[in-house]
Length: 500
Ligand SMILES: [Ca+2]
Figure 1 (cartoon, rainbow, N blue to C red):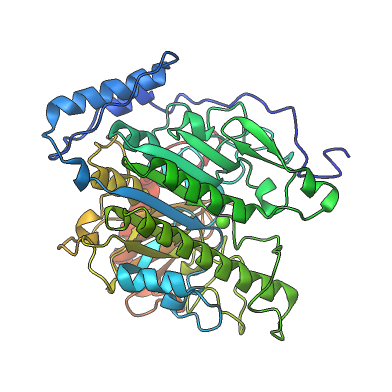
Figure 2 (cartoon, rainbow, N blue to C red):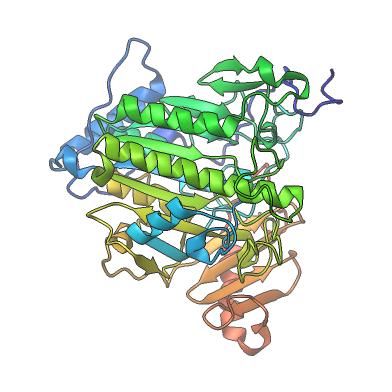
């Protein structure tokens, strides 16, 4: 079978990654750090095959060691960051879902803090993950879209897959400077084989899953990756449905916890459900509902995800690390389908995946950390994926690269006073031309085309973005216009000649 006939076939002609001079070397980024308060990173272990990159990270850690005071290991929690794929703002019981059952995630919310105004990095997969990994919003991060001008040919045969650059500093690399063991299982989407974006070259000690996000559309692929080795699933060949990969990721995560719970770890779990294709071994407990097949699968995927998160929490308890582990849960972008009248997966928000409206970018976000986050909290603080790297660095006691676009929301997680309302949150998107959005305070501005008028919404009164009030607030429009002009750096993969 040739590549043209099956876009999920492996393409051997993966090109070298494209580089840009617009990026400063990682060495520079890591040494130009902000001061770190009262934390001591552990020294990464050396190996005979130590790379220049590791030497750089080690040098950074040693610099920090001289600048920071000792911080007891018990105060540095393990970090688990779980992310669903295309799960909508309204898909969980704690966010108003009444049909799909999510008891474990609802319990997580009741035991932790639930955010009502948290945002993904983008309205689609790859750029959202790039923002998450780099702490840079889509106006600055390397991967600003699913397809870029000089991207490589990916495993699914599509051109335009832009990998993270070697000099990008990821949250995993930052946490490694603080002595964390780092693992990822699920869907990566930020680097094909033999590119600079491979997770093992971006701070992850171990990795298992899909490199290519289009291949991740299939839940029954004939191979996955374990580090840089292909793992074959012959039982999935020729359209057979032998092994369901979502289940493998949970098993890998549980095994990772068994192997690594004795020392601080960072586990990133970017699950692939409930993204289409709508494939699942069993649609229970919805099999007998009078719904379409896809509706049954969507609901069953979300409930299966919920079941597995319950297994993870049970494992934390069994290993006696429950109170020393902070767990986050979110989605990578808005609902792909609104399922209106059935599940209403965008809730009361406007739009869905690929929209700059709230339904495209606002995500459920739950954080649970017994003893540090008070149970049953609901926060309306506005924050987004660019804040995750600074937040996790703060939690771990690691210092920050100088140029992040986010801030640590750890004070908010701890229930302390923190004003997040006076800074702009920025997004740009390329699949429909060039679109931009910014949120500042309660104001949300959207531009659907470069020369188009600005839409302005007051989210405090109009979360559904139904009333464009731009004409009655020219001062706010002018401020937002300025932010939109100033929030991006040039990108050779996503050029905007009018602004660059
Ligand atoms: Ca997605």
